[in-house]
Length: 349
Ligand SMILES: NC(=O)c1ccc[n+]([C@@H]2O[C@H](COP(=O)([O-])OP(=O)(O)OC[C@H]3O[C@@H](n4cnc5c(N)ncnc54)[C@H](O)[C@@H]3O)[C@@H](O)[C@H]2O)c1
Image 1 (tube, protein in one colour):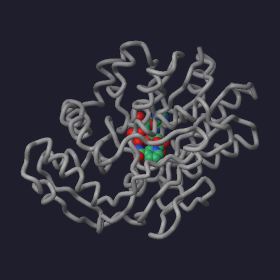
Image 2 (tube, helix red, strand yellow):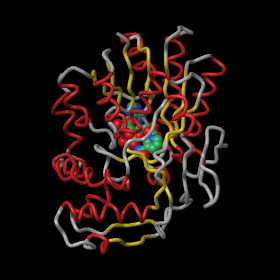
Image 3 (cartoon, rainbow, N blue to C red):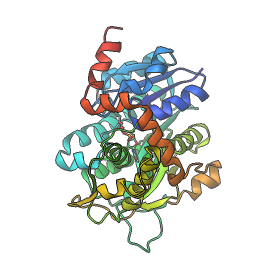
């Protein structure tokens, strides 16, 4: 029975991955999460209640804690999602990004190196972003595994630094590590400060839909379950030392995405077509805002047989329905009440 450590498993992608792992992996699953504003233990409460996931409230920068977890559970695999992840927040205050994304990754790498000490059959999967590559001009080819790093935001720079550390720990110390760089994820349990949930909730409530600048920034959208399937394939069959790029092959401008959302919300609420679109308002652009990201996932597709199954335009109506059906969750997240949830449910256990 091999034990897996999932860092950041109370966040958006980590929680979706923990669900998939609980269904597919028979061994123990341990989530380590500091429950920052973005972490919400309610995202995996059912897995904890069912004792399918062991939850540890703690910081990946705490070396003594991380060492203790390695000694207790003898992990075979680390899937490292924990990060400060919001670009706008990194522009307002970079420090927590440098601390967690660089310092925390370093702590995990060192703990894994010491615990595994060259033993076979171990895996350290580091989840990173396409934002490390900077942006593309309209005719440029998509990012590939060997595209040079050119980050534009403190968030992207901190993830780039972490990726470099992971590759160095693999090359210099022989740590069995793999890096995954993926595009913009969307799906259930996403904190509503990110574009898609924010726009869904604002449109549902008839509030303005603030679009940065001209809204023509292009992102490669990836459904979170497609991303988690890719991570699972890399855990099971990925080659140590390789980098895997995961894109949904769905380049869309932010304005297109918001329009799809408006249509999906109007449909779900039986509103006249065009009602939500009237709420779109262009606001001042983010400084250093990247214009275009696109990813070439052909290595992942060819070597591990992965391909995305979801399409943005058809997945969005179901996602709108998910947010409508999980109003308690979104209300708690937005009011901050979710922060007391952990204390109420778990602090005394
Ligand atoms: N969301 C995306 O579209 C996207 C795209 C590309 C890459 N990524 C990467 O995927 C990973 C997960 O992203 P997400 O969107 O789920 O992020 P998220 O912000 O929703 O979740 C991050 C989780 O990490 C936890 N965390 C933060 N600091 C911690 C610390 N010091 N110790 C322990 N836990 C800590 C938070 O509490 C939270 O639960 C990140 O590494 C991010 O860089 C995300």
